Structures are given as structure tokens and as C-alpha cells.
Amino acid sequence: MRLLAVLTGQPDQALNPAHGLEGPRHLAYIDEDWCIGCTLCIEACPVDAIIGTHKRMHTVIENLCTGCELCLPVCPVDCIEWENVSGHRTAWAAWTAEQASMASDRYAARQARLSLVQQPAEENMPSAKISRVEQALARAKAKAAEKQAPKG
Ligand code: SF4
Ligand code: SF4
Image (cartoon, rainbow, N blue to C red; front, side):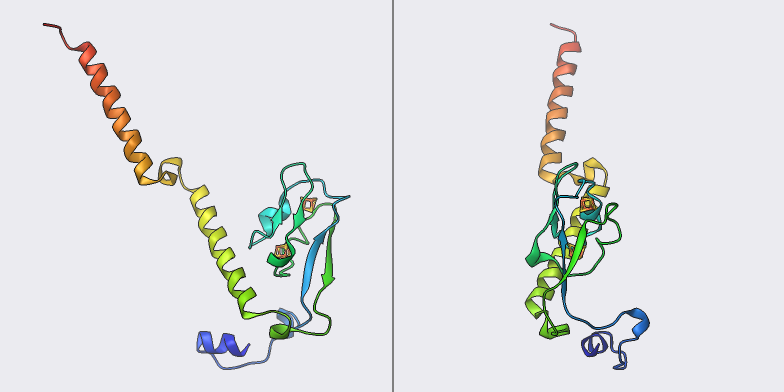
């Protein structure tokens, strides 16, 4: 809360319990015997900490999971479990600045990837590739024009 106050220039305040309680760090685990491979948890995870594919077993990459809980409610078969991995330690005693920085980077990378996927295919193409496609089209047009031109 102090860091947030510094970052936002707002007064230092205690955490409002309506927004959650400080507690130990938890990680998500998938019970692979029950996973139906629906991929909903992958879509929900903001840091790409879950791997798996359609109709195949999924798993959480432990060192990437932030314990944000966003995957828990989306699982239709309730096969994501929740485990305390820091005992009584909470906040910065349970989570390092390096881990926070890595999570932030992974979140930004995911957002960037998703924004590319949502763009039309042409925008998605690197400019060098577009240029090569344009050149090939120009060559094809020139050849077609050559064929149609009267001979002699
Ligand atoms: S708890 Fe959060 S970070 Fe961990 S796997 Fe689930 S959605 Fe991803
Ligand atoms: S949401 Fe649940 S059932 Fe679907 S892929 Fe994830 S863990 Fe498996």
C-alpha cells in the first residue's frame, strides 16, 4: 500500500478489507486427472503461466504463477487447486521485487501479443514481408500486362 501511495502520489492508507485481505502467497495447481482441456484457464491467466492445448491436459508453471486467482472461477470442472506456498509470510516477505518485475513483463508481453492477434492480418504482417508481397504482386501484374500487350 505504501508503494502504491508513492507511485500514485496518493496518501498512504491501510488496505480496505472490502478489496481483499493480506495473506500468504498461494499458487494454482491443476488436478490433471480431471482437466478436460477446455483452455478457459489459459485465456484467463494474465501472465501466461498455464500451458496446454485443446482437449489435452493443462498444467501451471509454478515459478510463473502469481497466485492472482483469475483461473479458479473459470474452470468448469473445478479441477484447479489452491496451495499456500509461503506459510505465514505475506506481501514482500512472500514475493520478491524480481518476481513482481517478471510478472509485470509477462503481462505486458501477453497484452502486446493479444493486440497483434486482434489486428487485421495485413497489420499483423512485418513491413518487410508486406514489401515482399507488394513486390511479388507488382511483378505478377507486369507479367500479365506484358502478355496482354500487342506483339510486334
Ligand atoms: S493463479 Fe493467476 S497467475 Fe496463477 S495460473 Fe491462475 S491465472 Fe495464472
Ligand atoms: S479451465 Fe479447468 S478443465 Fe479447462 S483447461 Fe483449465 S484446468 Fe482444464
